[in-house]
Length: 99
Image (cartoon, rainbow, N blue to C red):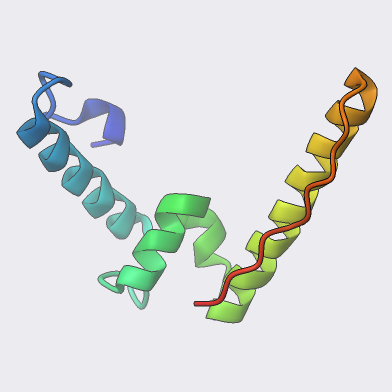
């Protein structure tokens, strides 16, 4: 089954069903991961955020952080380009965080 075929969600307004559907989706993401990464909350969260196929190509937390940092820089550059072309001023700086 794919997330689109989630049998647990028939009423999106029902909080209990929404929680069950979210758990179903995270389980689905987990099953897409390589066996050595399945069941690890760190890899499941990364798979949820970046996609299991991208995560399966990574070997360490450092790989994930490098990927996220690069993606964040690309998004920031994109936002600056939009702002520059629309006449708005972009003075954002990349956010940093530590795990």
